[in-house]
Amino acid sequence: MNNRLLSEVLNRGVAEIFVRADLERMLKANKKLNIKLGIDPSGADLHIGHMVVIKKLKQFQELGHKIFLVFGNFTGQIGDPSDKLEARKIKTKAELEKNAKHYIDQVSKIIDTRKIELVWNADWLEKLTLKDVVRLAQVFTVHQMLERDMYQERIKHNLPIYMHEFLYPLMQGYDSVALKADVELGGTDQTFNLLAGREIQRAMGQTPQCVLTVPLLEGTDGKMKMGKTTGNYIGINESPREMYGKTMSIPDNLIIKYFELATNVESAEIKRVREALAQGENPMKLKMRLASELVALYHGAKLAKKAEQEFINIFRSNSTPDEIPFKKFKKSAYRLVDLMQMSGLVPSKNEARRLIKAGAVRLDGNKVSDETLEINLNKVYLIQSGKRNFVKIING
Image (cartoon, one colour):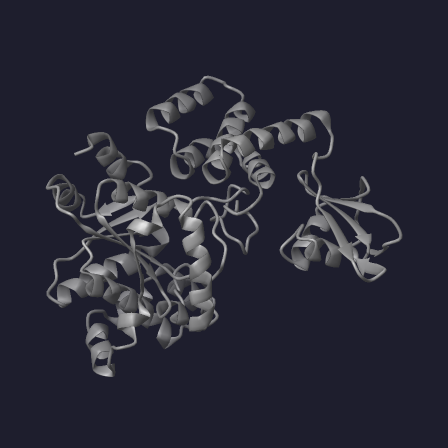
């Protein structure tokens, strides 16, 4: 038994464990456990917030347990209502399965996907009869469902609650029955769904799974949960330069949390970082260490070093990066917001408008304030978005 790793599993980056004594007993018994993580692949790209629970899953893998990564090609069609003020948009099974393939490629940066069971919950959920679903529904009361925070918020704001949303935790819980899960992992926003699995297993005559939740990682704004819709994310497929620069933008009070949840730095070393910060060490220096660790984790040490040097060049020498993407467009004139979106500087035109309003966009070094600005592509233009994103554009 690797006692250091066991301690990491039970303590590092852990929000709650239900029931801790049971999980400790099972882990110390050296029995091979079924460890489950469910993912509804509603989008194609992952960020470092998604990877917090994947890193925890990897620790269980290193202890020798059987890992099940459950892709919700059925539950994703219902849509998880957790933490939402409105019902999720329905995804098709084909969309979910396409996204799942991208997920597998990305999580393989952290965990050895060749040594885990990749399963699809439509394989068993599509076979349930109406009688089966009614039996599952008998495990919970409407009152229990309505006690959830997001439903209370909807009631408060007179927003609709749909019947199909009540089915989601029943289906996710049944996944644990199908896999005979001993342990299920998830973020704290999934606590209700994970505990539902315990109740459904009990109702089906199985030993209830233990549940381990991990904290949610705040985004670069330091306020909201990291997410694509809020634009405060650090994508694991982003360029080393972008990943490094975004990490440097996080608030100082998140430095330790990012080290603990998002890197592989040893806990003893993180303790020294915490002490250095408390003793007045320049947070910029510690964030540079953090940024290098993150880039090295997803892109390798060589590109991490290059990203660090580019950051130093841009921020300390007020220069542009050595390599700036060059994009050609067929028409002779475009709106700036369209060019920003089409060149990949921003994910949407709305985000481009937001950045222009914030004074974070420059054209050939000059700050832009007009959201409707149209550009005649009669020469090469340099567009800068924020402090780190650059693109050159021309008609061609």
